[in-house]
Length: 172
Image (cartoon, rainbow, N blue to C red; front, side, top):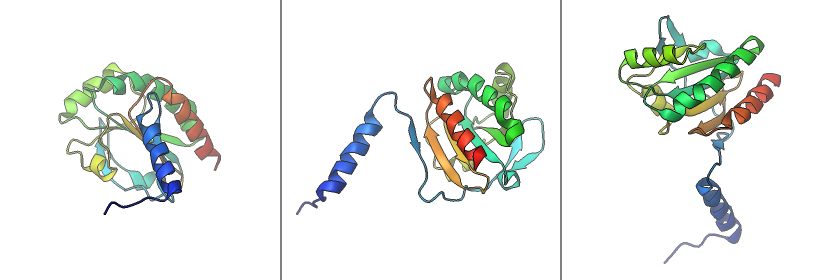
């Protein structure tokens, strides 16, 4: 016997499915009850290891990217500007590269003139902990270390949403 949804749940599900299928829509969701961000330690390009928990007290934007990803490369100049505009206000922007070969990440970071730290997730362990399957993916973490926003993919204009969300988190 088929399971019946009550009309309210069915309308909510249909609305969510329509929204998910709509072109040009940012697929962002605030995780339920602002769950704690999974901690990690990753090696940075040309620098020391970095641990997420050490960033507590700051707003953190994690951008998961790869050198082979066209939308990732398109998004990087916008992220550079966001970093330059808000890093003195307490934003930490970290690029988490998922390339298998660190030299590919290093070459791409150099070509793109990235001004923020690039971390190496060559074994994809951190990407799996954040349940990411789309490149690029961006995660915003508040000063208390809680996941507040998650964005999968990139299209022109998403940077305005990132900026609004960063501003709001910095004001908290």
